[in-house]
Length: 369
Ligand SMILES: Cc1cc2nc3c(=O)[nH]c(=O)nc-3n(C[C@H](O)[C@H](O)[C@H](O)COP(=O)(O)OP(=O)(O)OC[C@H]3O[C@@H](n4cnc5c(N)ncnc54)[C@H](O)[C@@H]3O)c2cc1C
Image 1 (cartoon, rainbow, N blue to C red):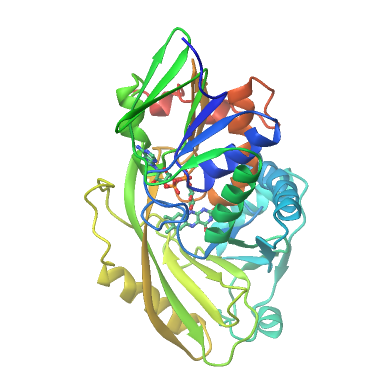
Image 2 (cartoon, protein in one colour):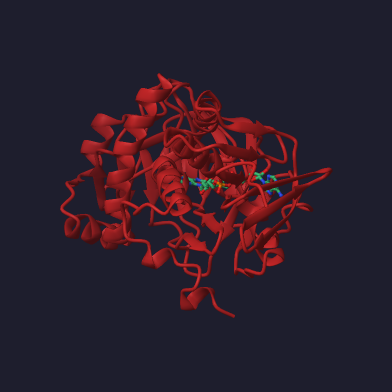
């Protein structure tokens, strides 16, 4: 059987476009198939911003984020635009201690600040006078939608064929590799990368690789300071340690910021989900903003978005035969985008990934059954 491409990438969100870019940089012929348009908001990668942080609960992630930061700077150099703006990142509350320990274990720098010192540097922020707060200076903001588009542009410039509004109906494996069917066309390659975000579960099941990926319905609500001043990113463990509030400023729109509650929505079918925000969560983040920011107003916008969750919140980055599985979500994958693109391309080409992947195995016990 003849092969049409060296690799086929299914899904043109941030991970699929990152993978296509990395493959074309290695001189591989690549087909990228996206069921909607590049940059659309129906999956996980839509909207203007995502948090970047090296402050993580486990040293493995801290080290990966440090490595990802290098990859971001390399991506920016190639794209000719700023895609990750460093603002500093705050963790607020005793719930951040595990993260502080992980930073220490990984040899990273961070510093505890008094709320007054926080207020002097970021006058729009308000925390309790006894709040426990640490700052990690590398925290910042990934420009999400621009990243996806820049990666797709670089992949196309590198020779990738990108087909938008082209839904993959089925992926089948055979002795020679994979066959990918869209309406009316069949494409063949020795390897396919499944980077289909919330839709990955069905494609993988059809290909004989059932997974425990559960999409959930998430949302972020936007606000604007009356008197714009710089803001850091914030993760606040004091309010709800599970549905943790987090804050992401938009460095390109001074004074604009969004607030959301991590993993706070119900499981959904990505083809049947609503785009209407949940008013209860809008009220909760509005309340949070009222208590923690200088005078501001809601802009009236709330974006809905999908997480793709694993039971342990670790990613799935693995190769099974001719299929590479790229499901780096559970609501925290974006910051690793260019590193994940390199890893998935490594798995596709048989090169050695730059970080250990054991905790991301598709066969790990938490994903069984
Ligand atoms: C509200 C929200 C806030 C978040 N905040 C952060 C944050 O602050 N920091 C952080 O690091 N991460 C964050 N994340 C997580 C991060 O955004 C995701 O990890 C990342 O976007 C996942 O990208 P993806 O490419 O895997 O998925 P997606 O962006 O969903 O891409 C998958 C693509 O595959 C396409 N596709 C699916 N099925 C098919 C098919 N059959 N044929 C063709 N194409 C197909 C889809 O249309 C889609 O474009 C957040 C996520 C959400 C939803």
